[in-house]
Length: 354
Image (tube, one colour):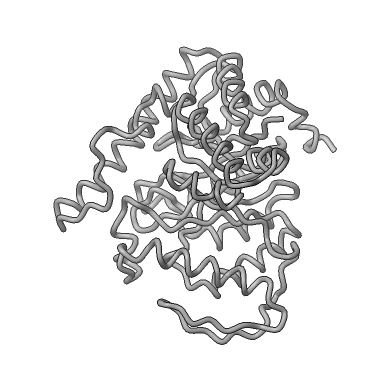
């Protein structure tokens, strides 16, 4: 049974409009809650306006207060930019505020925007090792009623019992991101579900098949493999309109403007500093609208979602508001998706009617 969620990643190019875009986000969260969207995923990006609310931890508290049913997930919290104990406390508080409606999605941090690390005074070369150490600390914090000590490369800690204790036991629901095949297979060997970045349906099918096979080779039984696939999510940019032509007229320019804006920012830093974090020899799938954008009528979008369902994955993270797309256009797309696409797969909107 395929599940659907919304990735709220709102662009704000004009600092004078930040407050308006943030207000739009709260309205979008309320709409998603009303329509029965399962999860509202929040991103974390700093300094460039690519994510208007910037701090997903603070913003998650506002969303939880403004909604009743929808889960709030992180896709992802950039762990390498946080002190792990502070982040563990914050996530535990959110878990209590939402009474279990929080999904703690963790990742090392951006692989593209070096200025995020520079702004926080953290060497970007340390991102992966900081993430790995921090994740272990957070799990200890949530599950050590008598406190714990930690001696590591980046933190030396003597921690009393964490308060508030998590509402969800033994700890808030945790999921990790995997942007590469290697990352997905690493989580498969650990028997863990994952969040997958934007890829074509063909790549998704191939990667998920390999993920399941690798998990089986690592000794996990068929039931565990099926559960992990069901708890995993793949990300797609989605625009729904009355006709295919209208959806593409709206979606393609917004998608291309979004990608060009991000590319320009990365190239600006490279021109100024000569630093590039990730060299790409071929254009990645995320920048090709044929591979990374699903735009069409409800019937067309449903057919694409059926292809995703056939891969065995449990959920789709739909990014509806793309780049400079107006909030009302995105809201119309969300409503059309939840009223005419989602019901073809499951009783997704039932929760909204209760």
